[in-house]
Length: 222
Image 1: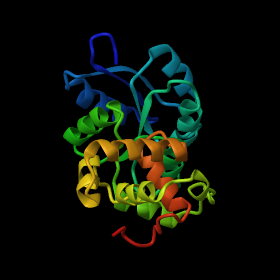
Image 2: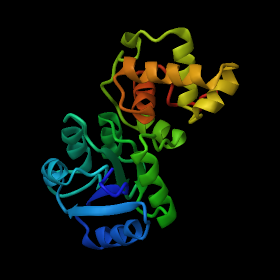
Image 3: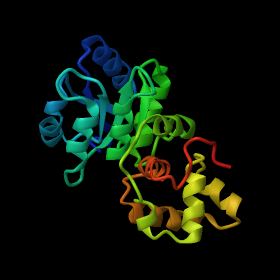
Image 4: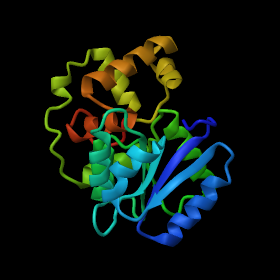
């Protein structure tokens, strides 16, 4: 967080009116400060290094360097900010690339302002903005190279069950209810799933689960 405890945000979109609208929406929230803007994903690593934002809100499609490529470059760095990607169409390979790189979630550009603000707070808190049906459709529509990543992760039977429930979008408390476990145990299991799969958050773990076939993306998880 920035010094006054507000969430520092970097906006990246080649459409100036979109940036202006987002800035107005986010700056209206007392808990968020827009630190800077850019129209080019190539500038993101350098700007992030100088401005130290908590969250980068970034378009996935830009003329030079898009959000998926920028997210990969940014998230490879030590202690990177959280990334929230924006898209005009949910069924977009660039969105999937950004999620596989570790973005905390994605929003459609037509998302209502209050939901954009809520999403920034959610991602800044280290949580994932996970829409299971949308992620499932993304993975089912595009080939990936995750291969046997989940098979190699060495998940226990219970951790695998936890991951399947994560793929349904369940919270730790909801998973605990499903499996008749205490919430603390589930939280530990979720942390183990993320560590073993090398995931930055729930969304990346769920994408890997679908991409590898650990959870079949063609069907809703039961």
